[in-house]
Image (tube, rainbow, N blue to C red; front, side, top):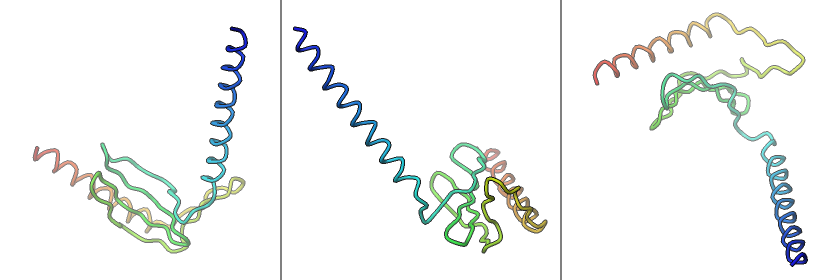
Length: 117
């Protein structure tokens, strides 16, 4: 009977070890820099938001809903992800005013959508 418990215990340890090794391998594989990287996301409601996505040298500002993704603005080489040691770089005021205007429009659209229902 003890033999059966030992055999079951070793089989369980083998399965757990295999799962841990596969998880470690998958994590290393996932950390490689891919074509796209999400730099940030701001939720505007359930299943709605704005995301900054870096694709190669370009940074795209996109609106995301449950059924649609739309390009709001494209930045070429303007916004770079800061290194861990360096402080973040300041963007110019026109970038923030454009984003602020788009956010105000989106909020107004959201309010009209909720007012209609």
